Length: 568
Image (cartoon, rainbow, N blue to C red; front, side, top):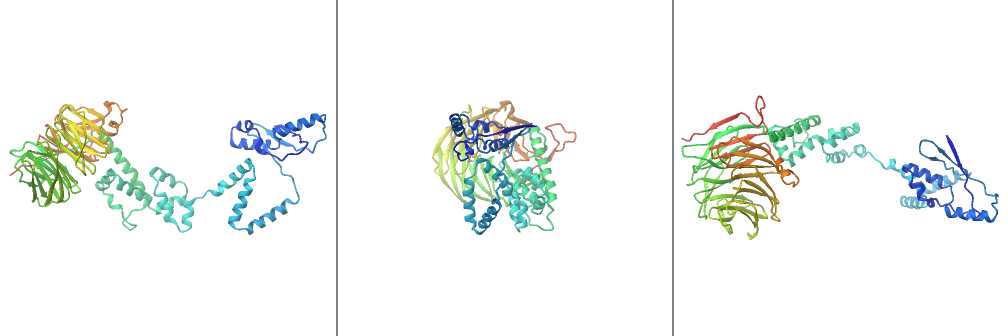
């Protein structure tokens, strides 16, 4: 160990100590805060540069008189570790008495006075003393509030704080200590996490319904509710199911069910919509057929149109259909009774949408009709929108815009509230057969065999998807995927997020091509678990990506179950 003794030279006229006058080059060169503090402590006993120069001048004038004041020694131990300095306080007999007297006075003051006094005291200290006080206070200010709150009878607050954690953080919190683990367990926080996911994510909600663990959610603590450990073990199983479903979509693994709809004069299924219980389809033979989604049996046939049923939509009360007979009919869902018939268009009604008391229909007569729906029997025409130069094949709308696409190669945007024209989206080289609009995104399919993605606010085309060999007849998208069907008989699944990324190569956008239909694909709908499509081949296909049997099946192909309906 090397001992270095530094003997500072006392000034001829003593100056008050000034610890902050230490040259920055000395303490900035330290490799750590600890070394900086130690260096400051050591250097504090060295006079400032100005005082040192004054001392040297005084010594020269006195011929280096060595009659100096008593020396203060600072010992630095230099070794392989950090610099360590010792600064000794002079031993004074009155210090202990004065300290006790100050503490006694301090205890008599109010809290506000105590705080003010300490602030004044700290303001008179130097930098290294501030650092020492900070190190002393830091552990005192730390609190394990999750453990402390239950001790005060505030378990519910601790549970509420931890309930905002995601799964990874919740796992880590369980490992902190037994008390944290107890709060998580008794608060049923894994159950609450799963419930939060089911409320906000359609995929989680669908899984909860299909796998029957929904019955254990959204219930108060009763004997029927499993312990927290059940939900803890359930969470990774749900994640594994989700990963399997995503892999099935990417790889095209599915279980196929087939409904044969043909009758003596039927040559196609033009439109459909489904829910968990039923599929409603519109056929070329002028009828609407309602199918049981589980057994695939035909439950009911609605007749009344004198032309092919080209479009339909239903909710919990009514079915609204449009036909090549130029009429729109409103049917009661449960009884199949015709409630209303709207006669306005001069040619076939090609598409319709309704929501929140508003309905929009479009026709081969090149017009768009906007209707107010006060009730199924009270529907009045609000406005007719004219501007397309060919048949209007499809419409969609929300509270802000009505969007229409036509055989004239254009997409037109109209104000929903005023029905005034807003802008035209140009880009397709041939007529447009289908589109969907949601938020700012419009996705359209055309007889130029391409799919285009548009920003409705600025009218810019964001991406062109190529892959179909014939007219793109139907298209749907959600937050993850675009699914399209075409006259080439193929259904393609596209990566929506990649399509919106201009850096993504075009070759990576189509995830899978599904080939089962033997005719043109007319309409499709999909959710997180399945695609249901209809075709000119008179079939409805159910592509199930959840319940996939992989025993001996090649990728992308699964055994099918067929139900054939024969009219009587």
